[in-house]
Amino acid sequence: MTHKRILVTGAGGFIGHHLVKFLQQRGHWVRGVDIKEPEFEPTTADEFLLLDLRRWENCLVATEGVTEVYALAADMGGMGYIHANHAQILHNNILINTHTLEAARQNGVQRYLYTSSACVYPEYRQTETDVIPLREGDAYPAQPQDAYGWEKLMTERLCMHYREEYGLETRIVRFHNIFGPLGTWDGGREKAPAAMCRKVALAKLTGEHEVEIWGDGEQTRSFCYIDDCLTGLEKLMASSFHEPLNLGQDRMVTINELADIVADIAGISVTKKHIPGPQGVRGRNSDNTLLRQVLDWSPGISLEEGLRQTYTWIEEQVRQSLVLKSAEQMRHSQVLSGESMVKV
Ligand code: NAD
Image 1 (tube, rainbow, N blue to C red):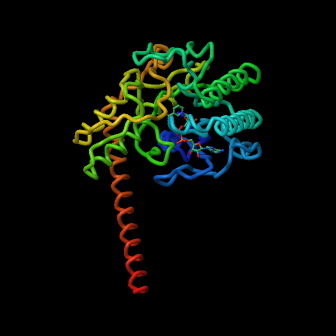
Image 2 (cartoon, protein in one colour; image 1 turned 135 degrees about the vertical axis):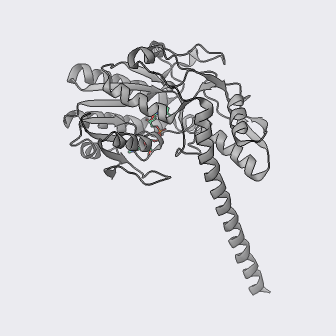
Image 3 (spheres, rainbow, N blue to C red; image 1 turned 90 degrees about the vertical axis):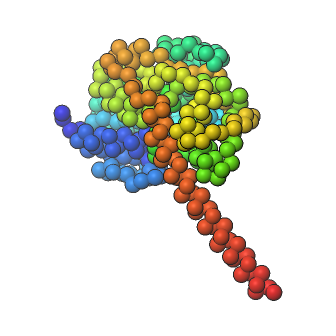
C-alpha cells in the first residue's frame, strides 16, 4: 500500500479523532486540523493545527502539501443543538466547507471526501415510525428538516460540481448516527446513544432509576458503531464512486428500545419518564442496497456490541464526574463552615 499525506479536518471531534488513529495505523502521515484539541485523550496526529476553518487563509494552510482530505469539520451536535441554532450552524458550516473545498482545489489535492448526513433527507419521507429505509435518490425533491441538513445538501452539490468542472475527485458520505467511545456525552451537543448511556449510568451510580426520554420514545433510528464507520470511509475514499452514499446500519430501533438495551448492558432496570423535547423526524433508517453494491461491504458490528463498548466508557466518565462533584461540594461546605466559624 502506498503511504499518503492526508488531512483530517474536525480532528478534535469524535469521528475525526478516531479517523486520525485509524489512518495512521494504515501507515499514512496525517495532519489533523480543528478549532479545539480532542477532548478525552491527546491527538496522535503527525501534525495537529489549531485553525478556524471558517477563515479562508487558514484553509489554505490546512490543505497544503496533502493529497487527500477527509472533511469532517462542522458546527454540529445532537437534536437539541441542531434545532436551536439554525443561523449559526448554517453560517459556520457554509464558510468551513466552501473555503476548505476551494483551498483543496487551489493546493492540488487529489481526493476529497465530504461527510454529509442522513439529515439531508426530506421530512415528508420520515413522518412514520415504521419508515421505509432511505435510498440515496430520496433526497430530492429536497426538504431537510433543519438548516444543518440544507447546508449538507448544498455542500454535496458543491462537491459534485467541483468534480465535474475542476476534476477534483470528490466522495460524499451520508452518515446515519455514528456512535462510540470518546464522543461528546454531556453538555448539550451529545447525540441519542451517548445521552442514553449517560442517563443510564447516572441511574445506576446514583440509584435513582428514572430516565428521561424526549417525546414518547417511539421515534425510530438506526445506529452505526464507529469502527464500521472508519472502515466504510476508507473504502469509499478508495472507490471510484462519486455520488452520495449512505453509511449506517439498517437495523431500526425505537428510542425506548435503545434505552432498554443500554439498561440491560448496565445490568439495571429503568423507569422511562417521557418529557417534551426535540425529537427530530419521526422515523429514519438507512437503505444499504447501494452501499453493499458499491463497496461490497456493509457495517457488521451489532448495536449491542457497539453500545457495550460505548456504555463502559461513558459509565467511567460519569463515575469520575460524580467523584469530582462530590469533592467540590465537600470543599464548598468546608469553606462555608470555615466562614461561619470566623463570623461566630
Ligand atoms: P464533532 O462535533 O465531534 O466533530 C466536528 C469537529 O469540527 C469538532 O471537533 C469541532 O471543533 C470542529 N469544528 C467546528 N467548527 C470548526 C471550525 N470553524 N474550524 C475547525 N474545526 C471546526 O462531530 P462528529 O460526530 O465527529 O462528526 C464529524 C462529521 O460527520 C461532521 O461533519 C458531521 O456533520 C458529520 N456527521 C456526523 C454524524 C454522527 O452521527 N456523528 C452524523 C451525520 C453527519
